[in-house]
Length: 432
Image 1 (tube, one colour):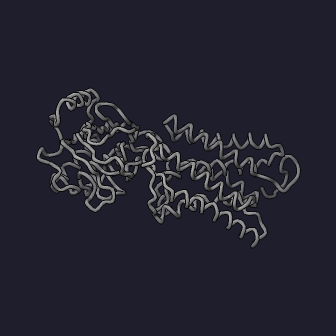
Image 2 (image 1 turned 120 degrees about the vertical axis):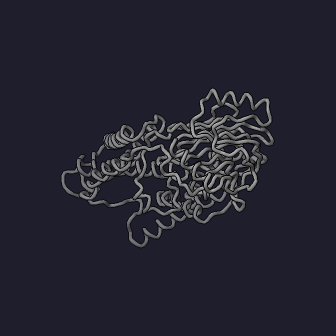
């Protein structure tokens, strides 16, 4: 959800395209909900799953680059039902309530060093916002490959790429010129030959030698400005339709200017933003209309990425900002189809806060009074969230979100933990 761009809600964003990996992911996502509701009824589990999923998909109607789907509602609801049935089978087969997990006290104490180690791994990543991970084998092209499933439908009257960050005043001057000319003159110093046109749609615009010089120049300068005068003929297509792209396949790119419905996105690859340039990417609000020419500028100064439309700043992001991430060696262990970008922060921080809270209760004991347990859980979550914020985050909004998630995870553990032993505090080894 971070970063998130908002758009005007419209039912035209809804799609029912079926993908097996996405369907299975959505089922797994809601299985824990079904297990949690196993003390209720199958009908109530169905209604909870249906209502929660419908609410989530409805919210996605207003989020840029999210694709609300009736298929997702179906798979999520099925996941809740699967979780309920699995819990019932487990209860009858073993006699143990699947909502309760018996943890030996000594094992629970291990949650403290695990949480500390996990927090260190999460934040111990130097932020790099250069082009050192760019690939020289990628090709500069207009639009998607001809065989792509989301080709861009529009016209480019002129475009140019520069190995420097253009000042906002220059972009504003060009926007004023564009308002009075069909094809304004672009400043000198660009990297694209003047004869380049839309011939060879979806194929490389440069020769092999030109591609080498193009790549080497941008990597050496670590800055770029992309100017495009364009007009779209379709604002109905979901997903990212690439307008100008320096890439080789949909999953990897050096940079891409794309269209999502009536919005624009700019994705720039750096060691911090990832191979797809989407962590974070820039998303504008609704800025495109059918058959209306617009002047678009995407600028990167080595740290700040900015997107302008007709001289107006519509999106920006600090790609050099500190943001906690999972180590690459952990990514290598995870299934490729998992939606890592969506779950890595929330799942990691909630897990670390829960482990820290559980370890504290196992080490110091479980208070009888719920209010004391809640205070201890919130304090443990706050400690983990504060460390991650101070050591690994330089964005206020993201830091606040992470702190709240960690406190919430601590509260959940505190409200859920029970002890087999009597007394306000555990005095001898046991289970929690």
